[in-house]
Length: 512
Image (cartoon, rainbow, N blue to C red; front, side, top):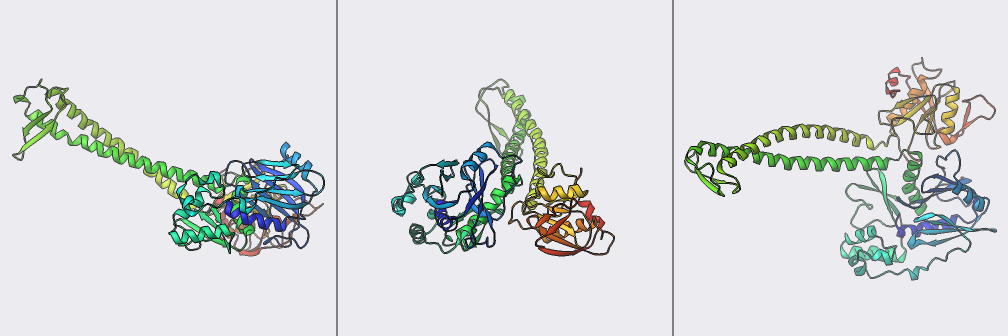
């Protein structure tokens, strides 16, 4: 998240956070902080209307920095770590009185009412408690050097942290008039829309302007999406990172590993091509060895020389370059040895190339399914111990179906609130959960139908020709207090899917 975008995000947070009450503090994963905030009526942020509790998620330390508001909380550890308990002691129950932003350094201070310290969110360090809130520098004090100075100094960010290397590269890639206009807009704090850039389906950057000369901020291999507010753009940027990382289903590390594998494969194939060329050169020297052997009877075998001219089969002369440290006969033996080495090398190269090409097919297959961002082959914790059948949809999404009432209850309790829940409408049946990486993850229609079909197969309608299956977010499904395990009420049904209970869907089950 760039400082030039954080500037606008901080302004919008300063407009919506005052009056919110800190309900709880979470540290769901290393370097991730989540604050549960109660929102007073009429103060709901854009896109979160009607939500009484929202979550402020922030990353600090190493990794890609994010800060955003969401209606969803991440999966929490069974026991809160000691640092989280210490923060709760000082923050819980207090209301946000104001927001101070040191936006060039992407630092945000929540000034809390009542007695006690304020909370400082800094991307470089663990959230700290400050008895005296730091005073951020004014916009006029941060400095906007001339554009020529920005473009000419790769280390400009050290004196002006808001002029990051990424921003400088973007400006340098533009024609001069476009660079001047973009720089002036950033300096004046002008932003009509906000753009999240995606690379291979994962958020890559978020900007407060569409870069001139591009379509909506797009570059080759990069897709851009526009948002009306910085809050909405920050959520779109941060959700895949935060929820994927906390739940252990983050797609970015897997894609990064695949890209690294592709680079290693390309380097290995290039090295093989160079080795093959060298081996062919060795084999080509067999003709020189044959010429020496054919004329050895009239040559001084023990003579040492740098060059030799011998008659060729076409009537001309064959000019040979010899190793002056070796005799004529030893040069002949060396050339035969090189030719044999070249033949052995070609056989080894052919085998190695075949192995690498098999690996290339594997990597390409992984790339084709990477867009679905499917979870690992086994249910990630905390669902690993649940008595459930595990399936993989044709698009690679993980689906779990409870084996009994207790497992149905466990699935609902332990699933992420943004996972999808399926159950046959109008009668008893198993609970089915389709796992998602984050709240914004789109699921192909085919995977939804397959998950619904698996729910129908384990329901009262299994023998019917067709069945209606409810689909809802886990957040909208509530266990009925005091009722038997697995009994639920559904606040909002996203859709009722009409599917056939096809037994062939059982073929999607993962090996035990």
